[in-house]
Length: 310
Image 1 (tube, rainbow, N blue to C red):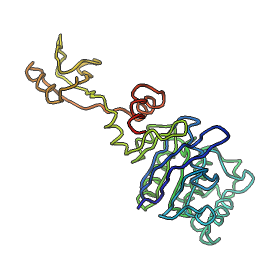
Image 2 (cartoon, rainbow, N blue to C red):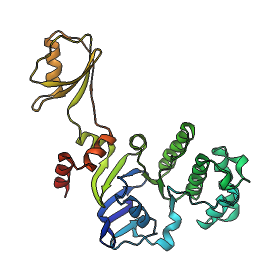
Image 3 (cartoon, one colour):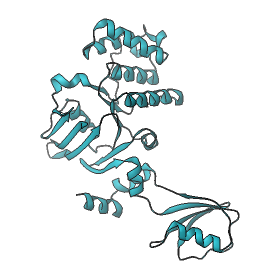
Image 4 (cartoon, rainbow, N blue to C red):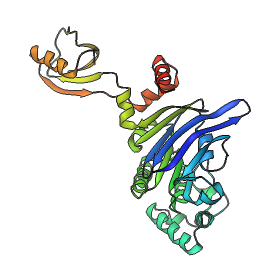
């Protein structure tokens, strides 16, 4: 059973279809990338999942039951892109206060906050005010207040904004640890390389509609273009073959595109017959960034995909 199930969700603002009939499911322990350009409907979708907005149509199920914002909010941790912290309040007191709002008693909240502050090397900041924090330190505090009540569903909107590489890796490790412990995580960002590194499943929305849904591995396979890199002992003076066309050259390597009707083994056999030693032969899968651009910019590939999945 999926921890979160979204069925035919719709939300309109005047004549704008912010979310237009979106459905998907999230398994427990999965890390889910929610992608899309600005204005695609991601924020509206998140606000319905967290109970801030009510859908005009459709249903949200949490743990197999219809989502009740009043009673189920304690099962969700939401870290918005904008800071949701009180600037004049001391960060230790604020973290304890926010944990109590999620249903923890004061002593339990204080203990958990101290544990996280030690883990993130924030002990010396306990008595400082939020307005005194750098952007990166503020991000770490927001992450702590999002997850310390151990929610089943965690929603992170641009969690690495303002973080240096060391603290980015610290947050990444904690995201993976939380997923291993059973938390389901929705990760929204514009940084495609982070999605590839962290997420096991993605959904791409554009103009309120879902246009892509699948595992990262399956999506890359779906959009591959028969491109391969070949490392050779030396480049031949001429290369003429019906099996492939050369896309690029660099030192002793080639980038080729295998023509329709031929297989990688046909290409390898060609080079063997030419007495050319091969040092490496690797398929070049597209990045999520490449796929994102193709789909969002309305290329023929995007239109073809949308007609198939409509």
